[in-house]
Length: 279
Image (tube, helix red, strand yellow):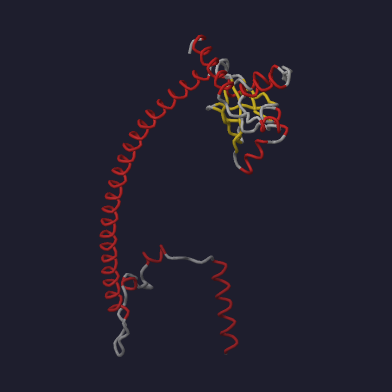
């Protein structure tokens, strides 16, 4: 928007306000009601010039400018005062703990005024335009500093479009990942099932072999360990391997255990004592 275009809009806005803006909030006195004067700035002006000898009411310059600015609606949130995608803050909101209230009770709307040529400040509309509170951009919104509102709106629209495209790309990638994951899981489930089935068969075969082996061992032990009365016991394999010791077997004596001489003499003396007592 050029300066000329903005000036034209401003002039038309002023003309609309003066000639057509119906101020429902305006309290008409009994003279205005009697003269059927509508609360429109031009009609009130003309009536005042005629009936009040031209004495005009004075207002501070800032209040006059405030009432000439664009008006809009902002939202008080826990993160700040949100207006046209940007967050603002002010002393009044901090003093009255608006952000804490918004976090506890929820957000609410407030009326604001703004100059479309700069995003640096907006103004809270207080007491029907008789007072205002300046709100400034928060530090985290510095990328919007010293810009026009239309520039920010274009930037936000571009970001929104880019985000939609990126989300589409992310969604396609997510679908591909889900399909790949599903295929891998299905293959793993198939292999696991086959392995379990094979393991189950193997376990059954091993159990069956162990059962057959135990059955054979029991059968062998049954024939060897069974009690048979009236028959001499059959020497087992270990007894059959014992070689009987003969007194004349000198070769075996050489390898046999020989007790110490002292112990042999003691045994002989003990035997002689026994023989003497017996006689």
